[in-house]
Image 1 (cartoon, helix red, strand yellow):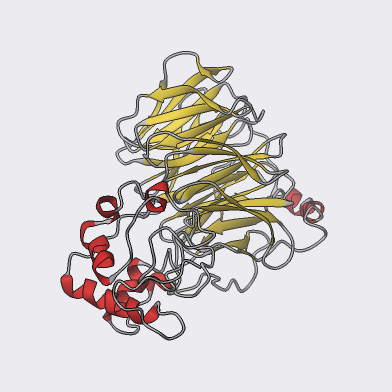
Image 2 (cartoon, rainbow, N blue to C red):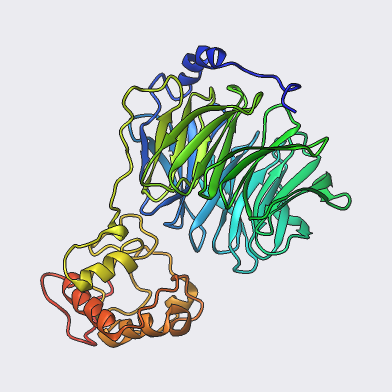
Length: 461
């Protein structure tokens, strides 16, 4: 099933490596892309490798220039109202598309680094986005059991796919744009014929697996589709014949996938931090890398295919040199992360680290986190930290944050206390644990060394 594909050998990939390195200004590829305030959910490099986009739990996308040891931030793109799960460049245009837990698809103008349109829908998570090679259409995999197709230039939905039982986890366009491939929690991979972005007939069942299928990627050559499953299987489907080859089993969910046309490889990343690189032509394992502090949520090759960027729970994306391998490959992930810290401080600090620190700081600055700083929290009117983009529910709220209202927030949940808020649901039903958290926050969020009295209003600035 592989023989008909054109294969670029490792030697050829290394030969073009020097040419590809010239794209980011004759510098080495950045070791890390540092700038987010939360885990990095997805990453995409431009075709020439001069730019990158990263999508984060901190609700933002960062547009990067690929230079320097930690990349250069061109712009921070703000527009989603929840964690951003995936982002992709639009071929042939200075645009990008992204999807989020907020249920929306965003179209971005990268020349002006602004949001063009936010296409909102239900609040069901949108997990994956793909763009056709001609740059005309985007497809989104939604957890409401559908996949949606969008006309990028028009900024609107033009087709909707229904047929999976449960969440749709992944979408991919065939290289010629004549098929859309979808995969879901129901363990199936389906092929949908397209004509000008519209559904042109019934779907074809390509594969049925006992576990959910998480990721898809169309491979170089045009006739192969790679997939990864919830129970760790990586495989390839020959689209014309429907033949399936299961290449490997990792025993951990496959969470990410990327391909390199010039190297003739594709790679998968798993929940336990393992990355595997396969040869498209033969299906053989080329290289393997393990980071014990996984998971790997995002993968993207540099143009020549010898470097691979990965993202996960860290606040930054990390480069791995696939070939030639370095004799020493130090783990660049940071562990424990702030929200994984154990055996530190008292019980109240522990609750803050586990429940709050992924979204909030205790300093006057928000450090690009998903939520506003908690500095000066008690006595503050909800929705009043300058510069933070609040949900309308909090902007219109008359809540004053006191020990009682914060305690209720964790007892009943933000969905009850502030309906319509974008705060994730975090509950602490234990009175003792809630009290410990409140006691810690009263001290840790105090301004000028003074702990506000319960109900005392702080200045809004």
